[in-house]
Length: 126
Image (cartoon, rainbow, N blue to C red; front, side, top):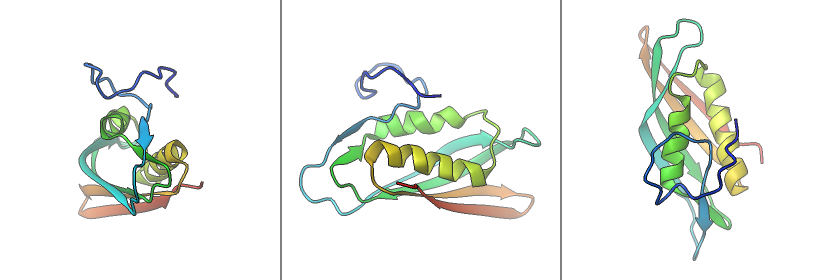
């Protein structure tokens, strides 16, 4: 689901989850931007049990950067959504890559379940 509201997320008093990714222009050379969050959650599409993730996002901006509040609210759109980690990583990478028009790498680490930690890496297809 794509948001149609184009009012910037930053500065809005609400913190409603949204798929809208705000960007801003690069000023000066920026080689790499990295984000790390341990606040990403979803649910297993089979058991409906919660899945907790650590996510690392990186990209080399050419002209625009991702605004962090909109990123945080985008990651919250997955709360309560049934999705496998192997589907979640490319979904996030492709959405963010579309916003900044450069490849975005996502490394998603699912917290231990059944004694196994799952790590999925995806790079957007732009």
